[in-house]
Amino acid sequence: MHGITRRTFGAATLGAAACLLGAGGPAAAGAPSGRELRGMWLGTVANLDWPSKPGLSRGTQQRELARLLDTAVDRRLNAVFFQVRPTADALWPSPYEPWAQCLTGVQGRDPGWDPLDFAVHEAHRRGLALHAWFNPYRVANHTDPRRLAPGHPARRHPDWVLPYGGKLYYNPGLPVVRRFVQDAMLDAVRRYPVDGVHFDDYFYPYPVAGQAFHDDAAYEAYGADFASRADWRRDNVDLLIREMGRRLAAVDRRVRFGVSPFAVWRNAATDPRGSRTQAGVQTYDDLYADTRRWVREGWIDYIVPQVYWPLGFAAADYAELVPWWAHTVAGTGVDLYIGEALYKVGRTARPTAWRDPAELSRHVAFARRYRQVGGHVYFSAKDVVRDPLGALTRVAADHYGGARR
Image 1 (tube, rainbow, N blue to C red):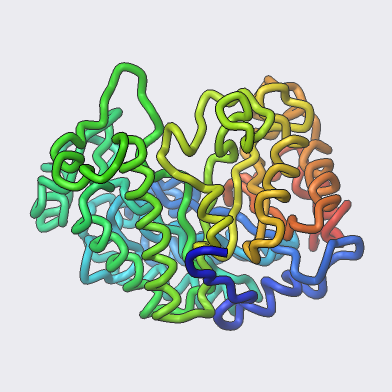
Image 2 (cartoon, rainbow, N blue to C red):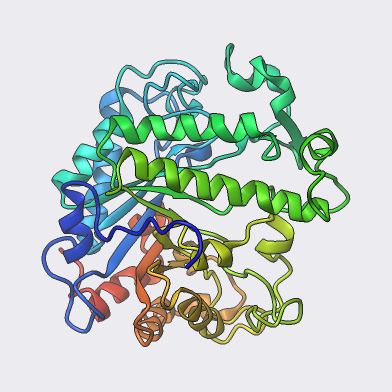
């Protein structure tokens, strides 16, 4: 393999045993190995999963978070992917960025406690691994820098920021930005015993019809050696991933580095190496994220493609994408977990598979046919609690030894 290989199996601290064995005891009979990961994403952007609303008391926020972790254990999960940097702000006292708005309703206002410290220790106390989930480039879900906290880096450095699609983003084409966001994220790794560093699917923003991402000045300054702007943008994201992996390894090689991309790298009609899908978005072409390369080069420890479609769905069949990713990771040392759309169950009328409480259980059964698949991660925590149509209870009963009562 070319490049560096970061993979170090297992997690950093008390969560290691949980990640390897499963919450509440050994992995269920029939699991591919004792290393099956069973996770949930716990989102904080716009108060997605937690806190239920901004401005709650410290005690209420802590009780809500503890209940989410308890539910993960009850559902026989063993890992939590906790969003700690939702919009260029932080769920810990960061010297780089302001306190997150989701806590108090005012970005930069001290909530009077340290949510990341609490989350890590409470997760580990329950035998759950905790991966710190970061969004590298999103600054705000609006385009007005004046609404950011006073002293916010995006206000101090307006040349770092671009508006697009009604949001603000740090410009991935600026080396100073890439270094800054890495510094901001690594601060959490240095200060807390997290088990992993986790990026979601947002790199360059998802395309918005009729709008351009105006990075002309950065391209003129840094893109001369590239055949196209697209190649330059891909290289910018490659550098973020490769450099973050190297720097993370230098801090603590036990902390695992992973990404959860949109599941379609490229359609086969675009590239014969791609999947037999007809997706409207391809990460390579539209988000400038060459996810296949990151796996093949060993720049990450694990990948969690968001395979958010059912078995038999024509445009993006679960039964096509899981084997495609299994083949992609084969022989690389990169672990593969499958992202599951629990949030769609019972809410989405079409495809009709989402109205079947057994659909996700069939996903787990199908994925276990591929030895490269090491587990599943469910989106998101509030749906783990809600358990739409009893779908997660069905998964636990069929595959995880049954949910705790």
